[in-house]
Length: 426
Length: 178
Image 1: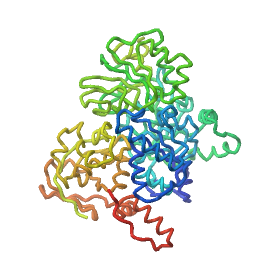
Image 2: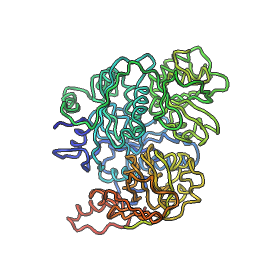
Image 3: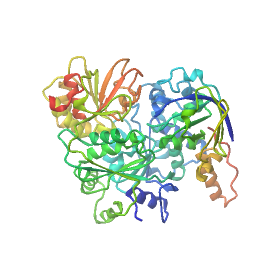
Image 4: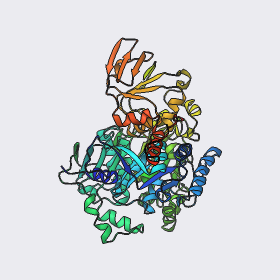
């Protein structure tokens, strides 16, 4: 019996001859990520263990992005824990404000993740790198502390569920819509403790940024990873980050495809030709409806950004709709590029100017409002349409506020009309 | 190990923002986190919950973020164990790693708010002392029991390393600080 791409990566990093779902393994990780919320706890545990030095200073990444630039004194203290730890352990991949970005956009952009890697991150959206054909998964702070000690992590090998997308994507339908559609179909526990593998002709033709959006939200269906087989699109992206993609690297590629006789627990197959932009209604990402079937939902705030949809193509889409238009009176538009590089690109391409001219704000990179941190907290009774990933009760502020999740086009169109709007309408 | 406590019931898909909202993630102190546990969905929970009480919930408990502050908050406000139909992957790991006992049980609907239940972690048996019903659950896999018995993941790893470094004559690892 063959292996899925996820099983192959886990098997290689665990150094075992065979692997099957349900096995407990201990595997060496290629990268261990932490942020200003999760790393302080990991560092505290690491220190208590008395380990002294980290296992490999080049395999640790620290990104203060959630409450950074520090939103208050206590956040500043947490950010400083990262800075001090990076300095004393000589960790190169520590990204201070000015260099940092939202971690799951930043790591791929910096070429820190390549196909076939095993990446753990003390952040649930670490699954984003599955878009690169890396087994990337969210873990906790104690897992991270343990990795700091010996470079390993324990895994219970998950079964794999395959999602095959066929047909032709409608205009305005992107990776975000495909993944929202998927979560709407299977529910927020539809892939609980499973590896999700996204495949089919639609995925083959999907740009890299859209693939990141899809893999990013695998966790919203309970998925431990959201994998896409690497192909030319992946390869070109990795080459652009400055990583070597020569003959030697290419030789590893066949090993990163699922075997034809690999075992899947379940295979879903959908023709997505008919689907419109999808919107997840409060208070779960599974409450998904097509944007044009929502009725009139007035919004107080629109957020375009996050590890799900803060990439350059997301900003280009939003700017295309907002060019020459004004944000509806009484509506706040907050646009947050995910990294410094994207920020610079958006400025150079005139996108930042379009957002500001329309009456929006253009923020420095931060996770900020997505998790109710800062830069756009909702008060009681307010409604927000956001390109983020979670709409739980109180996620963006008051437990009596409402969050709708959408793609950047719907969000931008909604900023203009003041209600959740299909982009075709404007 | 026997855990006996009063039940607090919750529904399906209790997420980590429910357990501890992100705005409180500026500390790692379990007691402080515990004071805000479940605040968004049950504002008085931290006042009502007593030391040693047990949460009984539906499917997908702990879904959402990776914040280990969630199981820490539960421990911090006195919760001794969680029983649910299923647990989200990262919460599952975190609970193992910091030693918060949890049990998967499909029949959680039969257990009511305020019941006193007893969980035998060794055998996997749950007894509802209020209704006199008994439930059998799966015992923990050996690998996970190894981590729990060492008092958490860090002790498990340091004990392994000491054993390696000292040729098998490793000293006893101390109790996990959490």
